[in-house]
Length: 194
Image 1 (tube, rainbow, N blue to C red):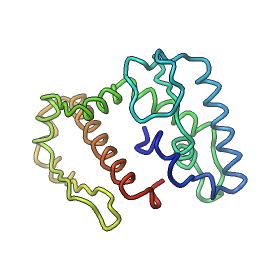
Image 2: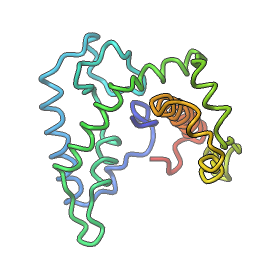
Image 3: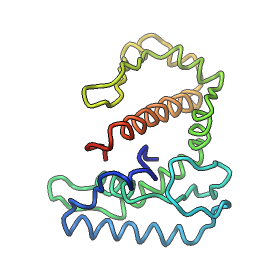
Image 4: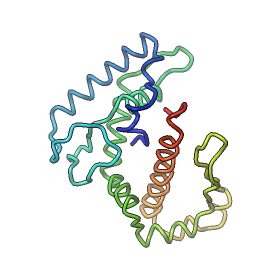
């Protein structure tokens, strides 16, 4: 969901630099989301935002606690850059759709598997077919990956496995990157990584 979810409270707060309009829209989005969250019950009873949550604890909707950093990211994604206006409804819809997607594709199971160093055979098979590599860290300690999509698609490898297998593989790839970003941010003391 957000590689900084649940741990950013010890680091810089994004809301500290928000103008009144941004803060008001963020409050609106938070209020709307929290009213939906109050209607569901997580089986664990845990209402804290966290990066890892058991897949089985999520309701059918996929709704789970999120922090202000996550809400702000969704709010900013739907800002009109010409008018600087926010679309709280679109941000809310995007957030709910993202949570549903994560539930449908069991993204939290992926996170759990990565924490346990478990990689399904199909994901390993897809990994061998892709043209991508981890290049290390940049000068600000952020993980860097290079991917040659043109070479990948022109090689015919994209047709060697089913689309759903590629989606699951890519979720493992993204969650691995998020895990590296999270570790990098922790080690670097959150310098500008919000």
